[in-house]
Image (cartoon, rainbow, N blue to C red; front, side, top):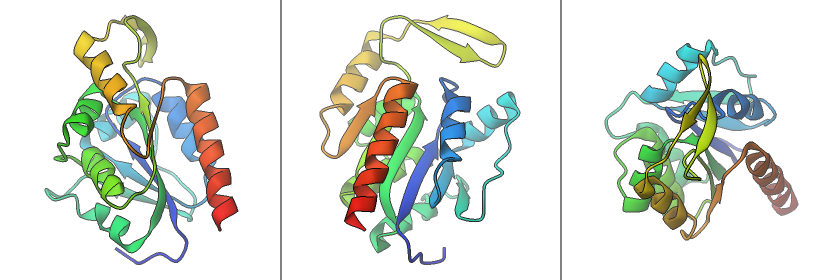
Length: 183
């Protein structure tokens, strides 16, 4: 990977469809951003008919290596912030357990090791939720373990867990201002 001069956002797409289209649209509001696309996210992109068409200031990094090679940029200061949105219950559980065996969980782990703040838009945040699926709205009932993992992740250092699109937008806006003030 090419070394970068301007630290940027690292946005991770997982296999969650919960506010996927809206999260995808929010990426387009950023200027310098690398989009990390998991294998499951590739499937969701196809389900929603979305294309990875971003401006030249963005790079798309796919989950194609066993060791998640694209995360090496964290050690060179390439990233100022991580956003995992939307985050599946699987990704949240692995982050809580310290498992980093996929592109999303490797990004989260390396961000933590390099003290880069993370914003996680967890999809399982209440005992009953309505979410948009490719065929329309559906009701989902997160398991108690999913809710526990989301609550546990909220206690992790340099991790902000958001529970709604409005909270995600506010967190990204706030972090953008913080980064601008530092620069």
